[in-house]
Image (tube, rainbow, N blue to C red; front, side, top):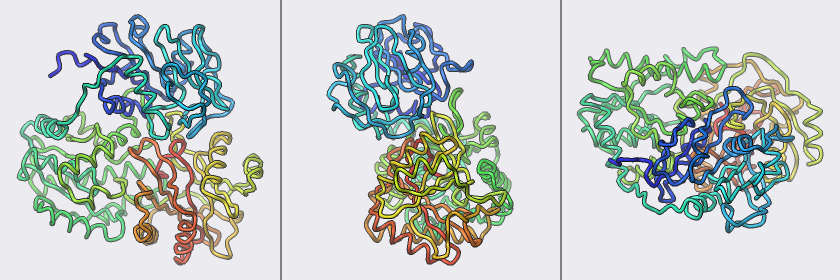
Length: 604
């Protein structure tokens, strides 16, 4: 046990940002201990630390409920780095000016590097950075030098070298900032003079110890989906507590991919896990989802159905609540998007964060051994545990299953022709339509629930569509996702399309399962999986003649906190679109070219 966990560490002050934990992780990856704290600190809370990083957050510095950051950080000699909201806070607190930007910046931006002497040391004159903000610093405080700017943000980086205070409007912690890790290392080693001492090599042993401590002699009922997260968590529990104290359950919700139940059962049998049973609950889940169209309501219903299955199992198996816990394969992005923490905004509620689960957490009856890890870290743990590659390399699949990929609508609504949109896309030689079906996004650390835009244009590259999409989501309010039309039935005119009143049915799920199976099969056949981190296939109730639209959402990512649309060959995309359009009820096929932010990976 470390007597002072601040010793030689970097304190990450949580301002409610989606990437707070990712900042701490990047510091650890560089070999330096990191500790996350809330903003209100006394000077003694910083004792032993080497520096402070203030995270981003969803608030404006002018809002009455904006995160409070202690003045104690200015009363020490510790270097301070503010990121996004932290950057704006520093400017506001020290006499600069913060104001709403003329254009919001979400996603990739190009920054001109003006000063390279300290935190931006070693960077190129023009750098690719990742933005997610509405407000911006328009005037740096007195004594600060502007180190970088973009076309939309004149103070993208600033520094008071003498005081050791630095601010960056962009996010160096995400993979999409080209030299973000170099920037963080500049702060750690050139400014804070840290040493590489943090070596989390004993992670497996620490996780097992955590499980034993949290279980406190109790047994564990573990819901397993067959994905890498729940499988790793289940394996850790079985290893730590012994298989006699851990009972695994696979619930067939009717919301799984084609053939997935059989594949999962075979995998667990090969592993030799006999402490596993299958529960057929398709009728329960589909009945509960009947006529439900709201995405958040769907997630809550699914979470509640899992709780019902759990309670029924407790009764059936005679499990004593005093001696049993519920195990979950929750990972860190789940907790962040669900608004975990005092300041974080809720992006979307994951099924393992519904109120019933929250109550069990308050009672100390939930065991989540990997809740502080990211997807790639979970995969690393899986490799150490010698799990089969078929599980480790499996594309992530949402806990609520196809329910959040089968979009619904409470009304019949035609697509919209927006003059503002037409002006934006006309210069790119494209047509565009606003689709009145909302999808979930994350913009400026806030949840957004905004419209989809469809683009149409011949002989375009993915980057051309994506560039137009970035401009649309930055300049056009109430938009957070853009897709282009890949293929359509000969008789389909997008301008006459309607979003039809529709909810989840077994017929729609089967159509989505078939489309998803075609996409996964063709991707493997073309040896393209390495280009794709996750490949959601979405069903939309959008059509001209009462059918459906399929949207393809392959993305590249490392940890799900940020993502870029996958750069698949256009020729492959077109062939895939032609194959999908052959399905009877499919009228159109779309390809999502939106990054995260401003859009989440899943549409709901």
